[in-house]
Image (tube, rainbow over all chains, first blue to last red; front, side, top):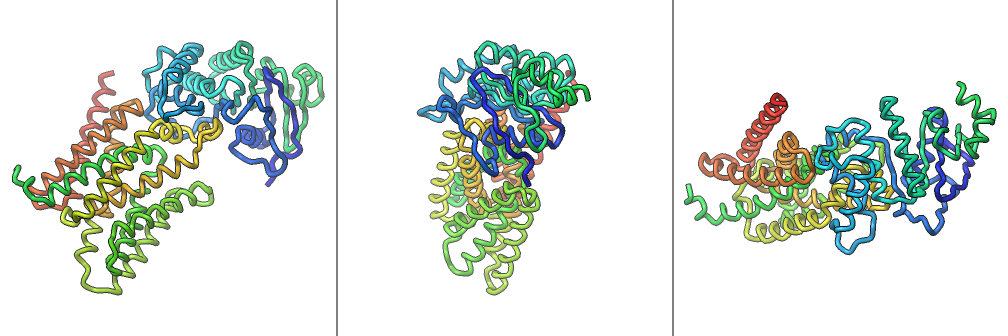
Length: 217
Length: 270
């Protein structure tokens, strides 16, 4: 079954794209295609030569497995480095420095030795963000990063993502059902419902009929 | 007590058992976390049938069983990864199906009950000199590959979508895990028995997860538990002339109870 048809959009380096839409509109399918987890039924996703598969940092929705998985924060974060080219399959010094750097940036250095499963939801998302950054600082694909978090923590996570986008010129593609907050940080909006309903800059979206209806409703 | 080590068959069991316990403990952590706890059970039934056929045809049991079980292990992963069947029902299908075929073939020939009994419940006497060489080499291969790809195996177990999205060869590592598991099961079931081999995979991992919080400490602890339980079980089985497999599992149950108690006390103390 095709959930989403005729989607096409361009992104430039440093863009922050938010994909919005109702439940079942095809947001997750789109993001999975972009992350390379699913193949589109027709058409293709082309990446510029600057962005290879190894330049993708991904923040998936949490799985049941992770809830009782014994792993320290450091182990989780550094596992993001594995996609870099290496001679030996083990971690090297630059991997460890990379992990330390991003743990510091996300304010989780003091949690490094703690067990991932014992952290709060917001702390867990920070850990997964640090891991995504270890994988790549070029493109971040975020699948509903604030699901199940309280409003305060949600705000914190959004501002962290915005900060990463600004500081490192990281391209961000985020799926969210929380439009109101999303439009505040994204510079581009893609609204889908089985097909593209809106694609363009955030200012245009706020003026458009589709945007007004979705935000107001 | 120590005269037991003067018997060559005990030494053989000691060497093979220690290595197989190590392998199963390491892989067990990943299998339990990936919700594949019962894969050992399924694969051991397949191994049982393969060995039964080999016995009837007068082939070497291990050489027949290993490729067959590796194939079954691929099939299981395919079936459950394809999403058309849930993991547990796929395992149940393969395991009972294989068992039925095995039983049917055995009934065609009479007079091989000792072998069949050994495959079911395990026996230290079942390990021949040829088996020792074969088992030692294969378990060293399993241990080596696990250690070399430890980080990748962790990444794939913890978060498969992330690993895949960031360009790690997820299919390769899943295949690797299933091949290593298949080999471990076949090597272990000679001694522990087809019915009990799952416990060798599950118990050490479950015990260490009770107390330890990081992946590395869980893996190391479960390797230690597994080897210690095996050695204790072997001694007990010698002392009371009990089957080795059952003795090892009983020790594992005791260790699990102790670790649960430690976890409980630690939680209370907080």
